[in-house]
Length: 112
Image 1 (spheres, helix red, strand yellow):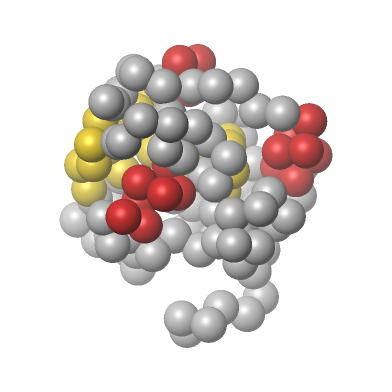
Image 2: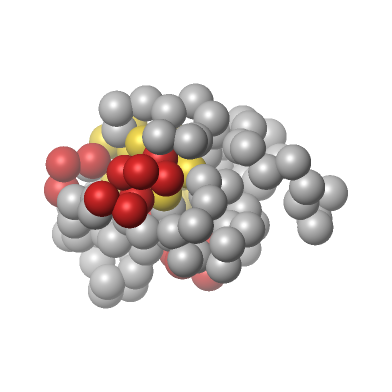
C-alpha cells in the first residue's frame, strides 16, 4: 500500500492530507474514502475533467494513462506534464504527492 500526500487545497482539504491507499485504488477513490470531496461530475467514468490532479511525486510509478484519459486531459484547466484524471489514476506501490488544482472546468457543482 502506497501513501498519498495531498497538498493543501483551500476548499477541499485546507490542511492537506496523508492517505494510505488500498490495492488497485485510484487517487479519487482514496481521497473520497478519506472525506476529501474531490469533484467527479461524470461519476468516475472518464467523461469529464473535474477530478484533474497533478502528481508532483511518484508519477512514473503509476499505471500509465490510456488514450481516452489522455484525450480528456487535453480539456483540463491548468494541464501540466504530470497531470492525471484522479478517477483513472491507479496507484501502484510508490508513494505519491498530489496537488488538486484550484479550478476545474465544471461550471456547476452540486456542492456550491
